[in-house]
Length: 246
Figure 1 (tube, rainbow, N blue to C red):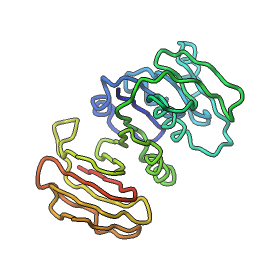
Figure 2 (cartoon, rainbow, N blue to C red):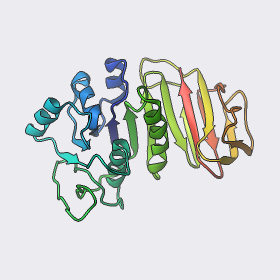
Figure 3 (tube, rainbow, N blue to C red):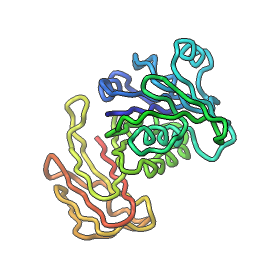
């Protein structure tokens, strides 16, 4: 099961973006990210946010067409994207109830929660792809990178037309082949998200690490290069961002 979350950041090429996500199983519009759906030729399965940035007319149109809408107060501890990611993760077996809609749109609202909550029928997501998380305000972009840490055991990626960002919690295999346009990523950068990441071992990169350590503020993991079509990266502790760039 593949879930797509579309946030309110930049999407520069809608044809390429549509190619990346077409065929996915479930689409979440994250507040102002709703504006991207008509340009992508898609309809959201669920709309989540405090709706300070979603176009009101478009929101009303989708609501009238029966698309489930989950509203949160504007004064809250989480960003809209964090709420959308929590909903996507909650759709997996064993996930907790946390603001969302089922794939069929069936909802049960619980007024006892701090915000509107809906029970989600589990359907086992195997991946989450987030578009519109980059560009725009730098504070939002940085916060969006940290939201990847909320995805638990579910594979998650922040994607735009030139970049793919994954969070490594244990081990991962990354391909240099882009999923759109038949192109290849030129560089792979490893950037610690926690104060320290230990036990880093890489294969398939020009500048390998064996049981290495990267610390916050260090830049020696930037702009590595593939020596094969795939790279294998494993860590023992911490959280490590893998950033692939064309």
